[in-house]
Image 1 (cartoon, rainbow, N blue to C red):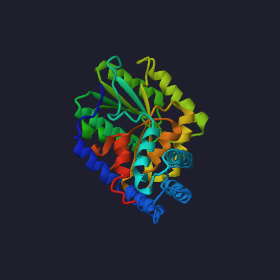
Image 2: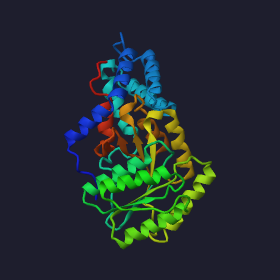
Image 3: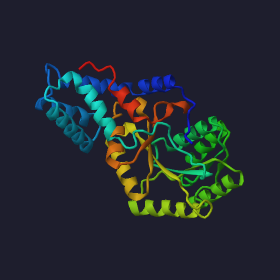
Image 4: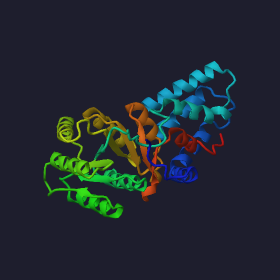
Length: 319
């Protein structure tokens, strides 16, 4: 079954439009300039469009793929004008995004209880906050949740997760600073099984190690968890800070190489004009974006809908 039907469509759209305002305004202004004085899509317009997408942090590879798709459309439909560019961009970008039909976040199979989500990402991206917001939303759905404070290298991470636990009424399993993260994960799953929990969220250390060190640590956590829940974790969620632009691309690349990332949450989109990273990272890493962060409130973490995102991004364009 799918989670998070707690948002009405209208509420989701309002939060999405407000959260993407900076990205949208920047991109639409650039697009308007790119086609100024042009009635049809020619080489100059395509060159300008390429600049718009790259400077909007869509990424080079994704930009080139979008341009190739637009070129093919123009070659096929000889009389395509610049007025149609917005809809062409929306259609082609949606077609490129991974798992574009997933509009409700995580799916909880009936035969996987507890459903175990291991959360990874560097310090400062909003990883622990994202876990807290997910816990809140699961609880709003009436699910029993357990949090595991397996980032044992940073006191602030354990304290922050504990605060979220108190705020949401969710138990937090933790140990002393410097404890083995795998031991915390083991205890968390044991507690979840004992208490018939629906969902487990495991916080992990927010250090970007060398790839070998990261892989070894996360692999150990997975092996130990599987002693309690044989097919855990069911999801490995990578949290990225959308406001860091190209740094987010690099972090995604390193984590995808180091471990089996299955989904992405991209945070802090409301405070940046770099929202194009959502398009580029999803396309280039071939990992679906499940959630986007659009503000401070727990309800501002939204399940990602590719079509709604792209529609919002290119709405009100006056090309």
